[in-house]
Image (cartoon, rainbow, N blue to C red; front, side, top):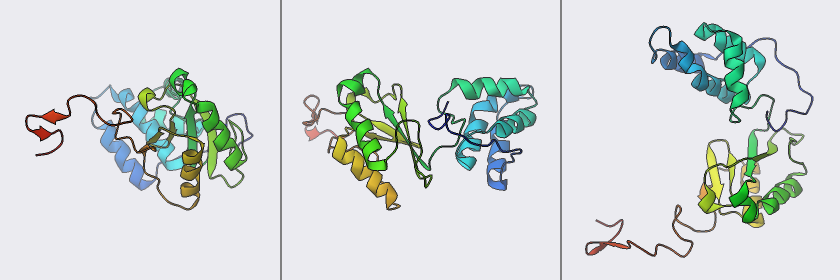
Amino acid sequence: MSAAAHQDFEQPATFAFTDEYLAQAKVIIAKYPAGRQRSATLPLLDLAQRQEGWVSKAAMDHIADMLEIPPMRVYEVATFYTMYKLAPVGKHHIEVCTNVACMLRGSDAIVSACSEHLGIGVGETTKDGQFSLAEAECLGACVNAPMIQIGDHYYEDLDKDSMKAIIDALKRGEAPKPGPQNGRHASEPAGGPTTLTTLGSKPVGEG
């Protein structure tokens, strides 16, 4: 369930894809043979979430109708994967990884920085609807811990200052650069590569 799931909200009575998203949905469904349309459940749920910001029961029912499958089959998928938000969340939904690697590298400080800077706790959304905060299980960038996910982007190698800088940039309507926030390149050692630094007579990456 999403970060805002415990807050009061109203389920919409109906849902329909916009023309743009409906066209994408038809392309996705057409990829699967007749009788196998249910395979499009995950990508259609993703489209619904991109359109509305979350996945409502009406959206799940609509997808079930499109795929000609029982609604329960869509509910099962939507409730299994935490990538789907089943209640409204902020425009910028900050998911802080608090699993082992990130915890050991200071994820508690990142949660605190978000909470202090936004004035909300985990599971809450700012009054203007711009930000929500959640804890997440392993997001798969352990070597660059601590890290967060906002939408489709990972922000890694964080500390309290860099976390607040990301929030401030989003408040200004900017798009902070994803990836490591401490100058590290990808997932190489923090001090730079130590092995395989040359390929033949040229440094790796040249030529």
